[in-house]
Image 1 (tube, rainbow, N blue to C red):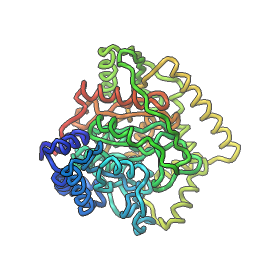
Image 2 (tube, helix red, strand yellow):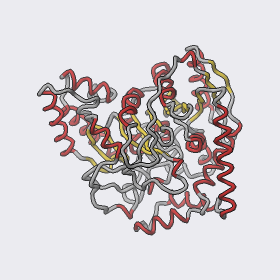
Image 3 (cartoon, one colour):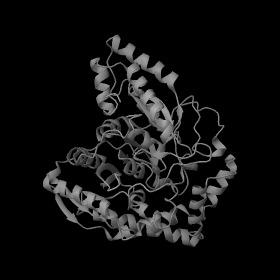
Image 4 (cartoon, helix red, strand yellow):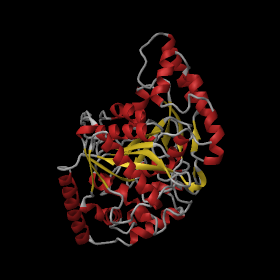
Amino acid sequence: MNSILPLSGTAQAELIRTGEVSSRELVELHLARIAEVNPALNAVVDIWAETALQSADVADTRRGQGRELRPLEGVPFSVKDSIEVAGTVCTAGTLGYRNNPASTRDAALVAKLRAAGAIPLAHTNLPDLLFAFESDNLFRERTNNPYDLMRTAGGSSGGEAALLASCGSPFGLGSDAAGSVRLPAHYCGVASLKPTSGRLARTGHVPPPGGWIETLWQIGPMARRVQDLITMLPLLITPDGEDRTHVPMPPGVAPPLNQLRVAFFTDNGILAADPATAATVRNAALALQRAGASVEERRPAAIEQSYDLEMRFLGPDGGDGLRTFCQAIGSHQTHPLLDGWLAKLEQHRTDVTGFAALWAEIDAFRAEMFGYLKTCDVLLSPVAAHPAVPHGHTIHDDVFPGFSYTMTHNLTGWPAAVVRCGTSPEGLPIGVQIAAAPWREDITLAVALFLEETLGGWQPCPD
């Protein structure tokens, strides 16, 4: 494999800037890598070679003319197949959208990356209408984990994570309502960020924002290297003028590590992390302590409510809204994993009085968690209770509650990053989740970068 492919997109942009590689050469390298790995992974569902090469030629012309190059000039990127790219079909992995007309414009964040010079290269796989913790649907089928093809790459941004891990793309975009950029990053050994709720515009996502669960989810950047998340975030945070929920908050500046107060835990009171995952979180905490951070093992008591509150918030109608939406768009047949989600949501059906009580509980949860920030700058935890599980197992009752570690920060709305910090006895990646106060993505990413550099979290592309 070419030595350029494992580099961050930021580093690849520098190679273009200095003339060590052309954008066309870089795009061709990534196209060749996708052709090499995708038959085994099934991570890419649509590839735009012709338009990507045309854009690469434009980037090379800009450089040849001596024009000022933009931050990501000529570097390709990938996009989860729930985020629109002009001229391509966005299916959200569901049968009702399979034959949709091509999108007439880019999603807001795709447009921002284009404006920074980056080149859309491919759509990546996901579960049926995004509802599963693994990426499998009825017409694209399943995405395999690059470290073990018999295991899932996670979901719902699993195709994105698998492609990034395999060096088919340096960075991309996913979305997250219960852990969907963080769990795949953990399973595949890459980096990701779920930003603060309202941090990034969601215009051009399929399905669109709206409804009572709107506060739970965000589009988020994913990358092989933390540095690309740091590069991308300032490019993405500007308003698009359409998403009414977007808050134009300026980026923060992280304090030195030795000024941070870090709390960590390996058991959220719902499902304890397995020994390898717990050891990885402890190693990350010790690394921060050696760097001078104040580190203490403790967890907010409210965290024990995370699973119950998230599931009740997703399913007060027992999943009827989701069933009706599927019928309305023509998804008359749905994947068994989505059916499994609907069965779980049915257990949380309630009436208006119950829903009002739930809102009060969530408000109390958020208030208690926010109060915890008086004594803590960083909350370190597992991403999930286990590394990547075999295909079809994410819906199992002995696995599913382990995704509550990510659900916590969909409920709080806090930013949470994931970076690889260890490896299981089976050779599977293990990530660590780093959360901070609202709008403090700078802190989560500074800690993630330190852990990546200190613990060797970044690894060569799996063969």
